[in-house]
Image 1 (tube, rainbow, N blue to C red):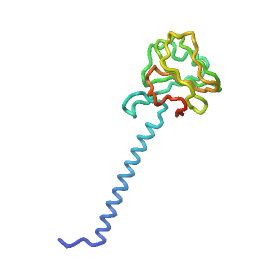
Image 2: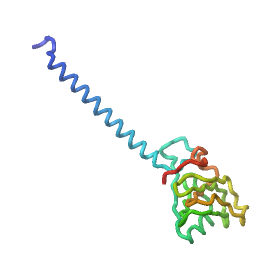
Image 3: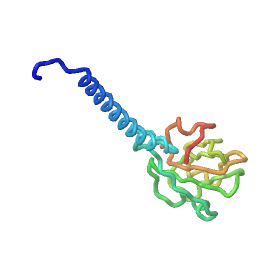
Image 4: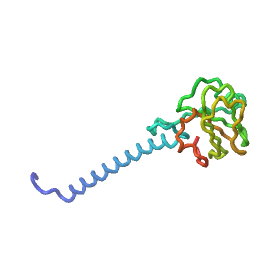
Length: 162
C-alpha cells in the first residue's frame, strides 16, 4: 500500500541489511589493515624514511666463509634501503674489518635469538686494519650504510625479525 507505515517485518529486514553491510565493511577494513600490518611488521630494519611501507631495508645474506670475508669490500656505495646480513656457522666473537671499503658503515651484532648485542656507528674505511668485534655469543652481523638505519631500530637488546 502506498503511503502506509512499514511493517515490523520490513523494518527488521532493513535493520538486518544495515547490520550485514556494516559487518562486511568492517571485515574488509580489518583485512586490508592486516595486509598493511604484515607488510610493515615483517621488516627487520627500517630506514629513516617517513613512509612506513617503503622504508624497509633489504638484507643481502652472506653465509659462506668466502662471502663473509669479502663482505662489502670493493663496492662503490650502498643504498640506504640495503644491508648485508652475515650469518656465521656458530655463535662466538665475530669481528669485522674495513678492508677495501669505500664508504662508512654501521655494524650491528646479534645473538642466536636475533637480539642486538652491540652496535658500532659510522665506521670509516680508514680504520683498516683494525677489527671491530661484538660480544662473545654473536651469530649474526648486519652492515649498512652509516646513518641509514632509524636509531630506534638498532638499540641494544632489541630483537629483530628476519
